[in-house]
Image (cartoon, rainbow, N blue to C red):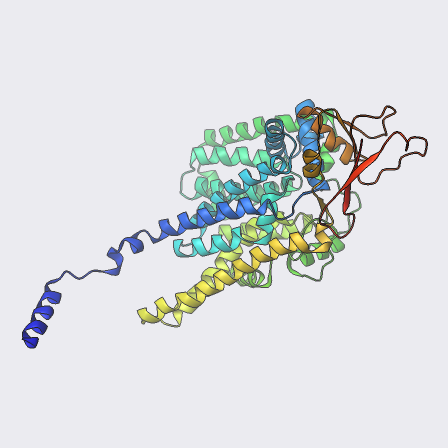
Length: 493
């Protein structure tokens, strides 16, 4: 009976249809499932990134003031960084002056940037590399910082990525894609509104005119395609031209980001150390290094490969962009996001080479190739975990950057009452807190009022004349969790 049972089982197994791995549901939809899971994690990280710094920097406060000025006088220097300014003005107008409303435009544009990065990588690399490369890129400290920064730094990521994406769509075939060409022309024009991106636009146009392949595509394209693209570009830059005529200081902002004292060698040195070396001293709200050692290693591998493939259009463009960008960084070394897109593409290529070299060790052993996924997966998880933790703990605890942030606006809103007078001292504080008057029943002043209000809140310790001390009674002091300058608000009644 036992032999009969064994025979029955063997016959049954032989008659059963063989299931291939490629027929399994999870295998057939592995990329879709991976991108969905990554999308959920990415959305969670974007939301949590807003809580890391716990407040606003002076740059974010200045950005909110300039966004408000855009509505009052659009044809002035406030038109610089127009896409971000208009979103921030709308956000503050709708939700009031809060940390969240100031950072909300960065969240929206960062989400668009993440989607654009994935589509760009899909066109520039093979699909199996896209997901792990996107994980490394979108969890880098640079991207996470820009995604929560209430200033226009996210534009240095979004606009170049979109231009490369639609430019590739427009010229990937023998005949130009008209729709993608018009979008690319509009994006090139909009990029001119952002400081320093004029050099990127110039580099893109020069590459298209110099490289044999792109020159061939342009020369064989229908002339009315090119004329229509030029018309779209011209229409989009008209407001900027008018603003520059009305306010010439806008020209300096676009060309140098407001820099006056330019030292090329010192600027390049500071830029490189800010990107890759932790020994660099941070003189701004940016935590250094921007990219960790593992990401730097992958970028170097991709860069070396790109040197050998420099005749190809995409590497020709990447290497040219890097050379121009590093030179431009002399104007403002803190704008490290300007090189995000080329470094992301080089990182993707570096990762593809590492994976390919690993698989080449086992060309004919499928089990070893599958087992090889374990160390590669561990490497990717370790790198992205390190990047996220570096961002979270660095911006929350590192004293060299936390001193540039404060949560005064949150503390003020928690202690507001009808008829409160808020006393701010100096710019950009005074102009920034003036925005509170639009959504709250408060008055913001920069001098001590002669008539004592029902409640007076001073930001930081303000000097009160001896003759006026009897009029103001200190009720309490509101503190923050910082070691230095912890006394944030003085409330008088």
